[in-house]
Every structure is written in structure tokens, then in C-alpha cells.
Length: 114
Length: 112
Image: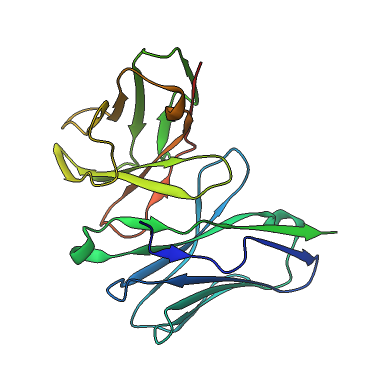
């Protein structure tokens, strides 16, 4: 079965507010984590990644936090915009011990209210 | 550099027919992955291939499904004798070094 799960299936935020999407993973051997954004009718789009030797990584308006102690991953989106409305997936890559495949969580749908 | 190209975008098949889904990876990428997605669900790993080799097919049904990534040409996901339960979106992704994967737009298979 899948080893990556999400706490919140849907999230509704006001435009301009910050969004936080959470994810739990169960495989302590995972060494690479990715957040993807999927808009309706499209394929997943890479947002940001982080390796297990880091606990924080920042991109443009997005920050990923990794807490290996509790196996928790989060995506923070600053100043959320209507264009951020989509389904967000966390994913883990198990590396050589897991055959390098990427396992996806169930996804969180983000609604941005104007 | 074109992205990952999948075709067709939409495919309708009658029960019992064969479905062939094609994926051309990004230029220079030798790792290809196939995923299946049902509506309102996440992506389920099916198979991971490198050129001419299947690396991991643990997510692919043992019967009716097969995948290949020949030395020349696109990767093919083949579903024989399709059933209604095969209706889904099938996504292909490619990567250069088995880490960051880039996804295609998917093929939406409908079995009638």
C-alpha cells in the first residue's frame, strides 16, 4: 500500500493568506521528497523538492519543511493566489532500497477564495 | 526541449479491445514511469522502466497489462482485453537520474 498520507483532504483559504498543506510518510528509508501541483485535466507539475539531509527549503512563494523525527512534510504557500487553486500531492522517492520509484499521497485540494 | 509527450490524450475502447498508450520522454531522459489515477484520487505507481529494461513492475496487474521502453521510440503501456475498471487517467513521467520526474498531460482511457 501507499506509505504517504495527508492529514487534510481539502483546504479553503482567502486570497492573500498563507496556506499550509501537511503530509505524513511512513517509510523512514525515504531520502527524497517532492511536492506536485495538479490542475484539473493536467498532469502533476513539480513545485519543490527536499532531500532527507535538509529540514527546510525555500522557493518562490513556497517553502517545504521536513521533520524526520515525526515523519512529517509540509508545503507552505505565501500570499495564496487564485491560480494556486489545485490539488497538491506530496510524494516520496524511496531511493535504491525502494527501487527509485516515487510514491504519491492521496492529495489535498486547495480552494482559494477571492 | 519539449516536455513529456503522451498520446492519445483521450482514448475510448469497447470492452475486450486493446488499448495502447504512448509516452515520449523528455530529451535525454532514460527513466520512464507509468502511473494510474482514478478521479479524485492520487497517482498509483505501475511500472518503472529504463531503456529496454523493466526495473520495477510491482504496481502493474499481472494479467492484461504490459509495458515496454524500446531502444528506439516511445514507451508503450499496453492493456489487453480492457474492462470498465480500466477506465482512468494514465500518466507517464520521465527523469534523467531517477529523482525529479516530469509528467506528461496523461491519457484518459474510457472503456464503454
